[in-house]
Image 1 (cartoon, rainbow, N blue to C red):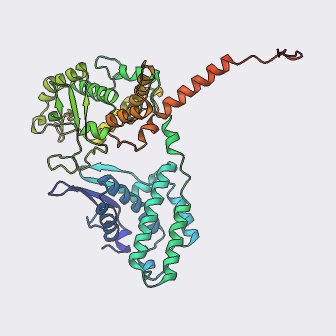
Image 2 (cartoon, rainbow, N blue to C red; image 1 turned 90 degrees about the horizontal axis):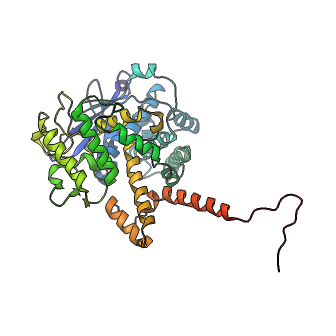
Image 3 (cartoon, rainbow, N blue to C red; image 1 turned 60 degrees about the vertical axis):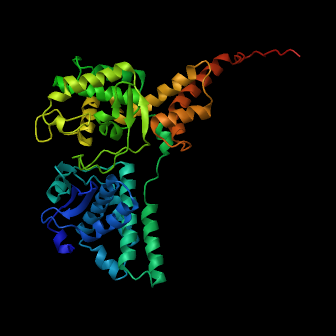
Length: 430
């Protein structure tokens, strides 16, 4: 365990690695000595990892804890020492912590399996600014949970009822200072894409387009296939990056979306995960042909790509050439496309999933004899990989319902009896 003196001349980093059994794991360490920080890692192991939460959940918890460590470090304070003495955070300290969690503090730079979190020199040069309310909320939530666990672990609260009351009060005070969360479902209503945005995206991903932001022809072809599979199948990013060639049945034109957590032969430390249920999706013939052409005409000529059967690989020369495309590379594709035009300010990979759901609703709405609402929800839930009755289908359908409601409201207004002109009296027949 590192003491406070160790903290004062170092920065914090997350060390990521893959265990022999394939499990992804991460630790918060002193980036100079490489020594793990005892209590943060004990917390993540016992409270996050042992609840079968994902690698991303562990990493997110350590990022939040690192913000707390920086806050305490700048004030030359030690949580461990205070909690052992039965001393907890005062209200003015909690207010300061809340303000601190609003700042842009973290510079996350990945270097192989090493994520630099907080570097003092970079921190001093950081421009002032605030993080989003979602980031602030997430930081304070992680910090409150960690502080509660640490205080209970180190204090005598199991024998001292008054101490337990003080800990509960401290934790409630931290959580009470989180920003008010906007209605998540309402936010999802506006995550679809307009017709103009979709038309522009089809043009940007066209390999021959002058607007295509990628220079290499094979990368253009790969990225077009990525776009087509997202828009036509409504896949999540993790599902897309997990596709293996053996998952594709070219004869029947079907794709198997399978959950494969902690695969030993996946070299990506931050493994993309399939969060939905396993399912088999039909694909139209033209999409199957595009996949076939990519494999035979592009992928097979990428060095090292034949060492595995993940469909999408890194084409750029370098140490990762031929390896399965990473989450960061996938996000970079989206970022470069979004930067082409201000029209695409809201574009993310996930908006294509929302676009798929809107098209599904439109298709059902135009059918002469559409299935009833319950049956439609069953179909949508299966194709999206949601558990039946989870209610997620209704969330993704809200944008379509909102648009249809607006259309109905306008038509009703067109058919209303016109108001009488000023100075006249409208006659009514008995």
